[in-house]
Image (tube, rainbow, N blue to C red; front, side, top):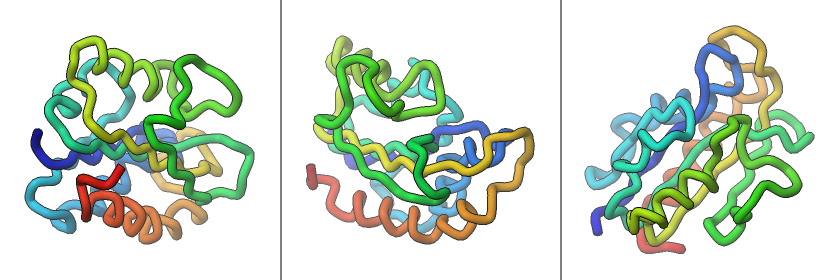
Length: 154
């Protein structure tokens, strides 16, 4: 198994929905060499190769849980439901649990899967993040850095 992949999810043309991609761009050059950064745009089977043979995969995505913009949530694989229930973990139709289920079926599931979800404020058409999310990028980056420092951490 190799190190870690950090995958940013979201559409940067829909303001805060692009938070995962924006964070990936801020992290470039900031992570250890065995950490791969991936701009995922959306969860899809195209991301399966990024999961293969990884000790840990960290996803960054927007969420709408009705909290203040920029609030950061951390979910581990055990927190991800086997089916859709309660608060959605993604703003996208094909979510993290479908991707992880596909990886399990193909025996490509990483040992540890973490979702860093960020409460969005504005998902209207536009490339600029809301002020709340733009201001939270350093905190989000710190959370991601803490996750990947020890890729063996559950």
